[in-house]
Length: 144
Image (tube, rainbow, N blue to C red; front, side, top):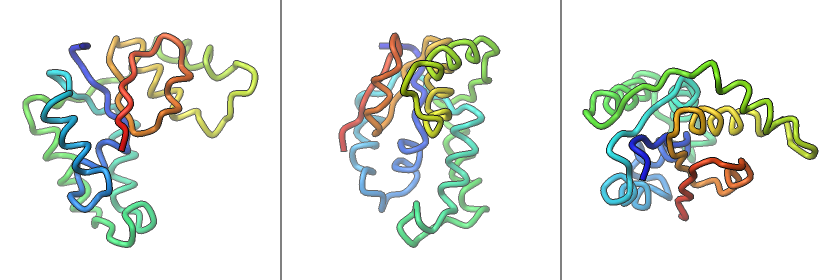
């Protein structure tokens, strides 16, 4: 198991909201299957805070911006959670994956997260199975 997990935004949302449909699965992952360290990146931080305040994403019960920031900070204050700076080397990996024939530009953020995980030798964790398309990526699919 890698030393660091890089949870996707959908995992952080499920962990932050006890009413989220995947909260129990996310808690099980956290308690039983997670690496010794979990990391936010700038993209997952921004996406989590933004999504927690979105009425549609949060099924009509969004967090206030203050609550969203508090949820993020509460995770970051845990000893097993860290912030992972985006490495410069991730851009070349992202470009390699995204320039393949048939790649959808709507997946650019996913490609960036995958590239950060790949270049930092972290394991990407997500409820989204589509990360499997990124060759060589250490990926753990949380099935809901």
